[in-house]
Image 1: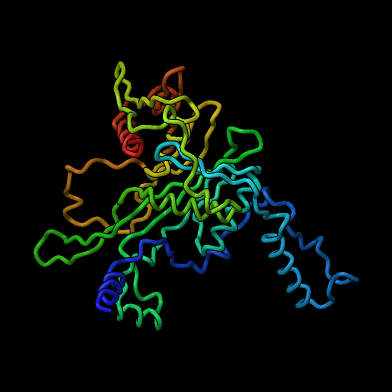
Image 2: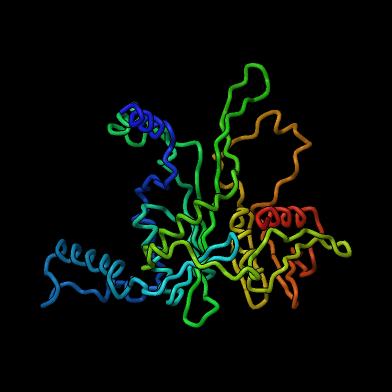
Length: 370
C-alpha cells in the first residue's frame, strides 16, 4: 500500500507528457475548407431554392436543412474519405506520411483532423500546401495535484502553462505516382519573467522561442496517421537503409565571398530538409517552385510574442543585433549536383545575397539542419 501511495504521489506531482491541448472555440467556425478544393461542398443560395417536393416550405426548416447538408458535405464519406494506404516514413530524425491519395483529398481530411482536435488554423494556403496552427496550450503540462484538480472542475480554464506549441504542415505530391506526402514540424515558445533593470521598475513576462520538439512532432504525426486510416501498429515508421540516413553533417561555408549551406544529399532530400528547417525557424512560405528549387518566404519568428512596447534599456541597447524584417520577402535557392546540394539566399536582383541579413537567415536554417 505504501508503495502504491508513493507511486500515486509521484504521478500526481509529475506533469503528464502526453499532448492534451486546450480546445479552441473558434476552431469549428474558422477552419474553412478552400472552395477550390471542395466544389461538391459549396452551396449557392441562388441555386439552393426552398420549396418543392424535396425541400421544406418554411425558411426555418430550409435553413436548418441547408446547415445539415453543408455539414454532411464537409464531413461526409465521399468528400472526406479514410485512406486505406497511409504509411509513416522515416529517414534519420525526419518523419513524414505517405498517403495513397491526391493532395486535394488529403488537404480536406487534414482540415477535418484539426477541427476534431479543436485546433484553430491561423494559416491555410492550399496554393503552396501549407497549414499552420495557432499557438496551443498543452494542458497535460499543468502540474496535477489535489488543489488544481478540484479547481479545474469548477473553472477549467483558470490554469495555463508557460509554454506554447505551434505546428506547421506541408502537403505536396509524393515521389511515387498517385501519392501525397505530409510533413509536420513543431515550434515552441516559453514565457520568461524579466525585470526592467532599474530600481522600482515592474517585472513583466516575455515569450521566447524554445526550439522544436521532435517527440511532439512524432506524436502529432502518429495521431494524424491513425486519423487518416493508418494502422497504429505501424506508427514506428519504416527506417530507410543506412546509406540513406540524413546525418547532422550539413555545413555553413563561404565560397568566394558567398555564404551558403552545403547538404550532402540529392536534391529532393535537400529540398525537403530545407523546407522543414524554414518551418521550424519560423519562416512563412509564401510561394515555392520545386522545379526551380525556390522558396519565397517571410520571417515571422517572433509572431507569438504579446505586443509590447520597448522599455528604456531596450531603446538604449545599441548592442542588440538588428532583427530580420518581418515584412520583406526572401528567396531561398536549393540547387544540386551529383554529390551534394547547396542552399543560398538570393537578393532582389537574383544574385546571391551577401548581406548581413542573408547571413542571419542562413544561420537560422543551419541551426535547424543540425
